[in-house]
Image (cartoon, rainbow, N blue to C red; front, side):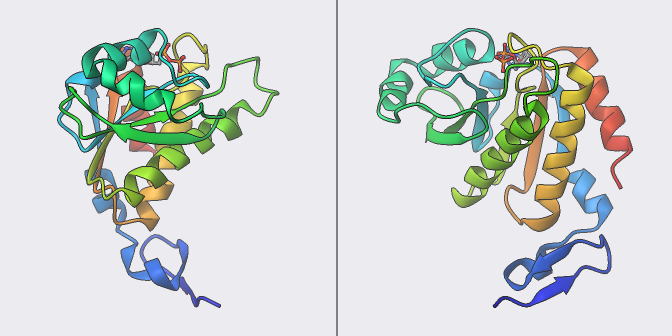
Length: 198
Ligand code: ADP
């Protein structure tokens, strides 16, 4: 039975294995970076791909990741047998500057009453867990589900920032998370959510 401890700085209750890993809020904010750009150009340990359940490529960021990584990425994806919505799978990065691609499947937005928020949270959490388990020090996320899947951008930014902050409070890895917006509006949503993190 693991001991339960309570971090005096951030008030997070954690299990003994990770009790020393809680960070102050300032350290937490230092670990989250917002940029505007093309995620396929980033030299990070892992880039997250907003994939579909087939994991066999698609449009948007998925298409860009597969184009930049080359056909060997698709060959590895074929061996995975797909990925349910809310879960994540890891592959090599091939021709990308990133060492790994973490493929996750966000929910399609149907109006909010089909567990969309829970599934989007789960997509972020499972991606971060894979990054941590694979010793990734840096990981970059696109704005999962906010393109063709039509999740409202402000609500999606809220989910992204809150799930990442919660995970980083309790894990040493990844050390840095990059929120890679493709447009300035999304970046501004991230910045304002980060300003509210406490
Ligand atoms: P989804 O199907 O999960 O909605 P999309 O790829 O359609 O995925 O869009 C997700 C987000 O990724 C959108 O905000 C889109 O603007 C952004 N995006 C598209 N291409 C790139 C890219 N090369 N780098 C970073 N973000 C991208």
